[in-house]
Image (tube, rainbow, N blue to C red; front, side):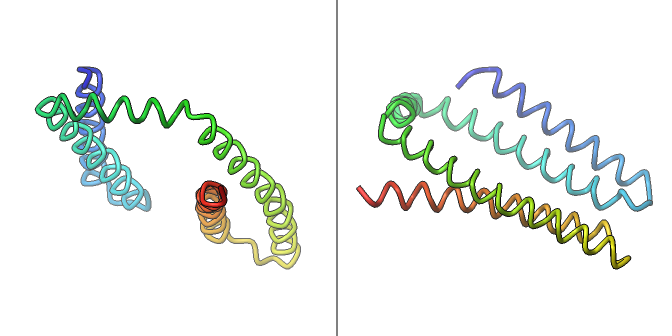
Length: 144
């Protein structure tokens, strides 16, 4: 494991603590967002630091893991599956986004426009696009 990973983990933890401190110092509408950022950066940093120390103790396993990842990344079949999964996710995205534009236009025309709805919708859209890509990748891989 590279020292760079340890530094990145430490930076993430520091950012998490900074966001947490900012949240505790301010009592406004952004507090919940700051808590989320603090948790995200903090726990991710702790995870990176843990993996750094774990893999430094298990160097042979880490070397095998890196070789397996390298093979999987360069395997032509896996590359083809990732390409097809990306294409299908893109096509689904190209269908969903115009529908969403229409829905928001209707909401705006009816004076029902609310930013919370947009945030929830875009979050769901992002999750759907990710899940669709993963599902198509697995489906293509299993249809050999």
